[in-house]
Image (cartoon, rainbow, N blue to C red):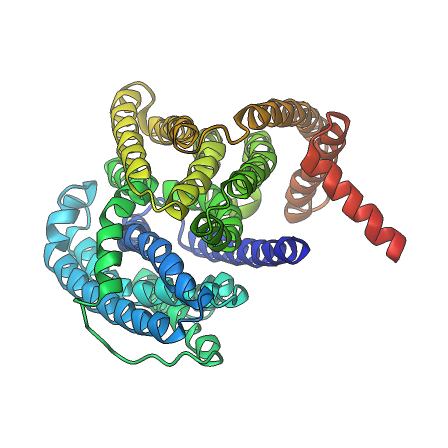
Length: 513
């Protein structure tokens, strides 16, 4: 259990650092080029579209690859596992080559659905056509991550986004003024390709050697193809909602870049936490389910859900409390205006409302996939998409562009409630009452934290501390430190197990030291 916790902690740290660099890269090009021009909004749309599309297929691939590949590794059938890896890798690359060709062909049709059809149409089409082939590298990335994780190699898959972020940052500083947004598109393509290519050396250090194989009649490939469609529906809910949101946002003038930035800032931070948990826990749940150890299975699911609640409810409260300070510190420089910051802060607060629901849904989906049940997550995915679309169309008429993130959060909470209800019907009681008690305690501790952070923000707002960077840094960091401290103290006083475990671990380490 200790080694699992250490692995989760390491992977979580690496993924959060990776996301930090990704945010830094986005902040650099946003402040350099600004967000009130067509080309940078075209860029934001062009990189989001193929990314979201393949994230849908890629997540499904990972979920399918790990149980099949890990199952054979766990039963000492390496030859069969490696044959499956050869086939799934080869076929995935072939499929994404086909998808890229189709995407390039229909790029004009896609752009015609946005405001870019009357403002920068030709440039938008070119940008989208440049970015579509990156899906080939996404395919390699997801499959290789699944293979490495199944072989117990978690560090490198967590590091994949670091090179791409560094390439973007270096491009803007060294060549951004000379080659502009078009050069940024090329640099981004190279960086995203590197996400897959850097996984080849660690894979080579295992005893697996890739051999191209397109045996689509292979028994394991047939089984994978049967599993993928319902998993696609289940895992695509939030990704398709993001695609819908970005496309709708593209009909509001100069808002795509801001919406994309906030969406990625909050959602990928949350998913970094969730995926670091599920990357380690999912293979374990799969093995417990295969051995029929359902009591232990339900106990592990409950522990992970409680951890998600313990981490994400205060994170959501924190995002809302320091939304303006966070956006100001991250991107409130260069060509970003105060109006841009205000809009992005409001979008951030509305997205934060749904992050806990998203986390619960993602973890519970993995529990179903471990049980080889792909239908219920698929049904829930359809419900989430319908709720998001209907809520968006209704709220946009009332709130304008702010209706988009609020609708997304409403669909996220709805999805969490529905999938937990399905899990209870599937497995019987898994400690739902205990989870509910934990949720209320965490919510209470988070509200105490929120109140303290708002009070600190008010006091700090009366003073100015040195230069702009120092002032913004202090006004962000002090509330975060106060909030984290207050939350941990309140959690311990309320008897939240996760907090007391952390405190016990710290005391133990101090005694050893």
